[in-house]
Length: 170
Image (cartoon, rainbow, N blue to C red; front, side):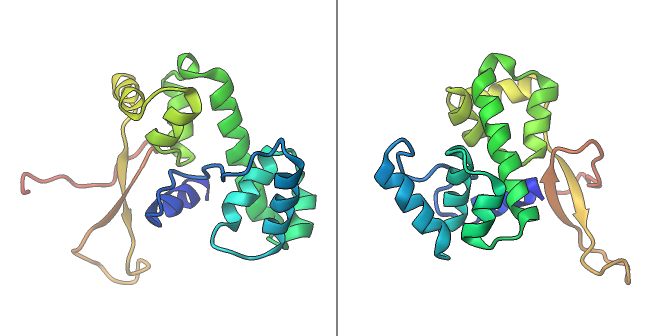
C-alpha cells in the first residue's frame, strides 16, 4: 500500500513527489489551528495535511477523531512520515543499497528522497544506479487469471523478481 499511495500521488500530476509538506509552518500557533481545521474538512489537499499532522506530533487516534479516516490508512501515512524522518536524519551518507532499496519499495521517488537527504535528484539517482538499485517490472493480471492474455501490462517496482519478458523488438 505504501508504494501504491506514493505512486498515486505522483500520478495526480499536481507537482507532488509523494507526501510533500504543505505550506504551513507547524511551529506557529495559527498554522497549528489551521491544520486542525484542514483535517476536519474533506478536500483534495487533506491527505497532505494528514502527513503534516503526523510531522507535527499528533497521534493516530487524534487524527482519526478529526478526519474519520480509517486507522489502517492513517497508519500507512504515519509509516511513510516516520521513514521520511529516518531518511532525513541519516542523510545521504546513510543510504547504502539495502536502505535505498527499502525506501524505494515504500514508493519514495528520487526527487522526494533527494529533498529529504539534502541533495539534488540527479545525485540521488546517480547513487542509486551506482549501488545497483534499479526497478524491476511486474505484470498486471488484467483478466483476473480467468483468461490467457497476450497483452502485457507492466508496472515498475523495487521487488526482487522481474516478470517482464524482454524481447529484441522495440
